[in-house]
Length: 244
Image (cartoon, rainbow, N blue to C red; front, top):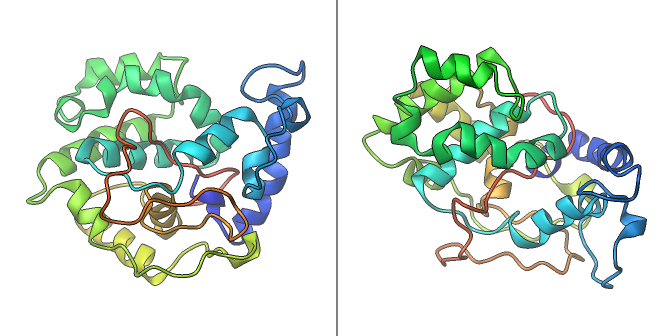
């Protein structure tokens, strides 16, 4: 998510999470089950994380923890692009299918995808079948493969200095000077579907910034430490709709 496509989008998050929960968990089961069906563990969380068990698990164990690895960062960029215009819960539910369809998001493999792979992806009901986004994912893999430095190193070079955790959702920005600069650099190098809001979501989800609310029980892992959150478990946490 970047939580929430933040700021104004962050306020949309609160509505979207509830809507997602109601649709997916109408029978009180599954990853979209309403929060009333949860076992109350007494922990205080960010508002967006209370709509479903899937969101809560993502919030508690992935979002905001330092993520490293070129393939991990590539997965994040791809899923952020696929999420554009959709709710994040949709991407979380489809994440296993995305990973299977995109060869585990290994940059070297996706960069070699051809027209046969494009046709396969467009026919795969398990993912978001959007031709422009599929083409962008393949093109971005080729850009990432040919970078003179690793994608991980490039993205983390824009990490801002630590700041106090936000008191409320309204205190979380949609973009920052660093996310604007990151988006500009990624586009300059040839990446597609990466705007300042997407770039900030990337920063949030990969632990470059800590936007867990001040009252939230989750403590972000300090930069420069190995959080143990790697490619197999990380994905963006933006809830609700947002523009690039």
